[in-house]
Image (cartoon, rainbow, N blue to C red; front, side, top):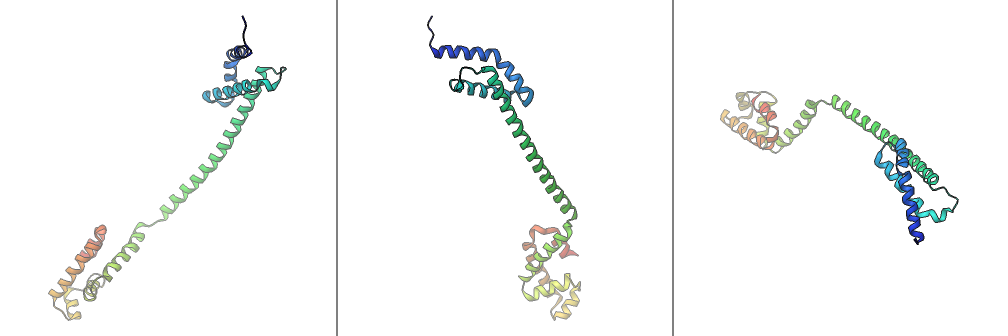
Length: 190
C-alpha cells in the first residue's frame, strides 16, 4: 500500500485530533468557561499547527505545541474579557451617575412652576394678537378681577359691549390654547 505524503499527514492529523481534541476542549473550557469559545480556541490552535507544521521542524511535539497555543489563546481571551468587564463597569458607573442625575433633577423639578411660566408666555402671546380694546377688557376682567359694570364704566362702553369683547377674547384664546384646555377653563371661568 503506497500512501502519499499528504495522506500520511492527514492520517496523523486525524489521529492527533481524535486522540487529543476532547482533552484540549476540556482544558480550554476550564479557563474560558464557555464551551463554544473553548471549541473555537482548540480549532484555531489545531488549524494553526496544521498549516505551519512544516515550518516548525521535526523535533516539535504536536500535542505540546497545540496545548501551548491553546494556553496562549485562553490567556488572550481572558485578558480581553477582563478589559471588557473593566470597560463595562466604567460604562455602567457612568450610566448609574447619569440615572442619578436624572432622578435628582426630576425630583427638584416643579412642573407647576415650569408649566405656569410656559403658560404665561403662551397667554401673553395669544393676548398680544387680540385687538387692543378686547385685550384690555380681558385683562381687566380676568387679571384685575373687575366686574362687567366696572369695565363698562371705565371703558365707556355698554355691558353688552364688554360681554362681546370677552366672548371674542375667549374664543381667540380657546383656538390658540386648545392644547391647554384646563388652563383656559381656569382663565375664563375663575
